[in-house]
Image (tube, rainbow, N blue to C red):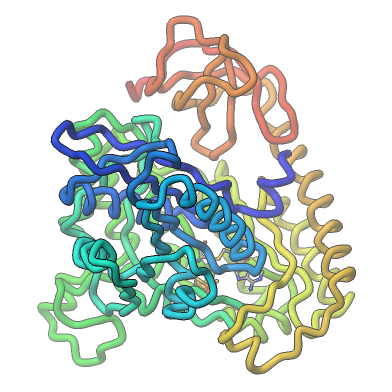
Length: 483
Ligand code: SAH
Ligand code: F3S
């Protein structure tokens, strides 16, 4: 198992390429850090700027405009971006007409302060203000710094058709909710991404239709908290007690949205992320069981196995309730894989709390996970209320212990695939061999197998002969009936 995958989901920033529009003359270099939502948002930004005459480039040196979509989730994520800004600074010395803009969570968190702290930055734009980019860029071109960090209660970018960047033409993200109302005490997201809002199901369907027409085979419905998706026909918002009967009748929750998309597109593989245990309903599990094309995979962050710590984190479930949900998943979806997010060293965490996390992991035996040492984020409830009192070396030691345990569980889960046949959707060539394809099973496990006559985008039945702790190695035994 790749350490980076276990410890930190922050991918290296990826520079993205856009289908070139010949009329466009300006060059945009855009890269994204952090969660899938940032990568998805960059596709919205590229779409907005394509209309302003920008084609994307992978060559930083030739860019007229450099945009970095940033992550604030941990201090380390912010440090990575500050280092990246130094690199842009060096390039700007060679190419002085280049403008630099900061998007995403760091932009929202630091606002105007960014302009003082990082002299290189010309433009600061929060996650809900991307439609204002054309105006802001004009300001910058006129020699003024530009900032828009206004958060919205209804912006979903539902009317913007994202430009698919740097992808494989097979899998795509479709964002369905923005923001988060959960206020987990450690988390900066509610402050940087604002109130939760759901996107119009019709615009979601239109985007999926478009992807299907373009030959995409798998979508991931995205949100900070997808299971709390709730659409009230554009009228009343979630939590409004006096919804009329009509509005109630036309409301759509996440299980219904899943059912709708899966029914309309029976050949499209459907994934979703992220689920908060407190919002995941049995209806969602039953909808997953009903549709073959909804993948057998749930990312179900737990953060801690101690009910006391969960309470301090303002997670709205206990250890026992989480276990009950796991038991229901195993019962309703026996082949479902489950992954986790866990934080070690949250304020006041004792050795006993840590052991509770380890024993919960033993119970679930997660397929894989993303584990982090607690990083205090300014402005969060934990930062205000609780002292960051667990010494760094203890946080790190506990992290090492859960990473080691997760590695054992990864191997255990991967070995369960041995000798069996699974459907794999081919996404790309294997990184290690140009003779092999790489794709994923429904359970989200990576599988590699000889290319033979198969091609990218095919659903292939693969017999698993061998494995590493994270990858299945097999051979194609024919097309699946999903092609
Ligand atoms: N709902 C979100 C979760 C956001 S953050 C989603 O869509 O993924 C992803 C993970 O980062 C969290 O589940 C948590 O485990 C971790 N995380 C968030 N804030 C953190 C902090 N202050 N310190 C360490 N890890 C943190
Ligand atoms: Fe953060 Fe909790 Fe929302 S982890 S994104 S506040 S569900």
